[in-house]
Length: 282
Ligand SMILES: [Zn+2]
Ligand SMILES: [Zn+2]
Ligand SMILES: [Zn+2]
Image 1 (cartoon, protein in one colour):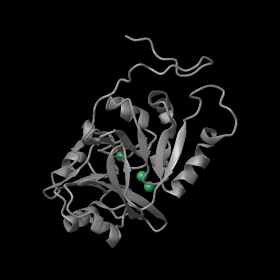
Image 2: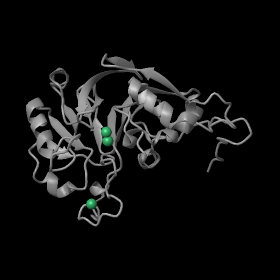
Image 3: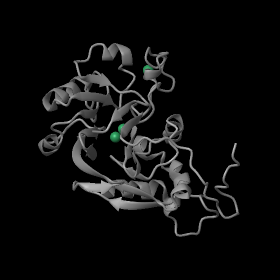
């Protein structure tokens, strides 16, 4: 047992000599695959919410990508702390955001430890609407006033992105526009031959063109019935049939879809994702 580093209080903070973490280079981990209220949903007595199958326990959506120069987190959901502890990943080098909904940003405060480990603020890659929402919702992280102590608030910097491809942590990322119902435009991301497209029910033609030739597509599929801001399972299957990736993994799943019984009926090459699932980057 090592004594723990002092990460707060009145004394000067101590950077730990080493960070307990796992090497995830070359992998994308689905940290969470659940819809905005999670599965089980609080108070729900349904078969899926009371299932003993660990695949039916779905935390809020996020992914972690092991890139050549570090770990890129996609979104900061409210379950972030538990997700990183579960995967034994102790270090996040940068964060990329799909959009500004509560289930995708409200774990942002859990980034507070990483500036101690990295020696600099955590860069957040996002569009302007996401930055505006984060600045409002986490105003204490951007206050003019000197913090009472080191680590009192997350230290963050913003890197504005749009639809132009960019490099982060030694890898190229291609953002693509997705429609998330009538009011919200969000980003999906392609990294090599793997793409992550959550919170969507419409993919414009120019984005479909960027999703050709994939080895793996991670795609929103909320439930059986249609929804105003998410693909239903049938709609998502249709997109996968059109794009024909080698493998399609569905995410942002509600309690309508039991893992085992849904997977048994899905077409070849398609499956429901689950928390902790690892996908090889290609
Ligand atoms: Zn969501
Ligand atoms: Zn339920
Ligand atoms: Zn959303």
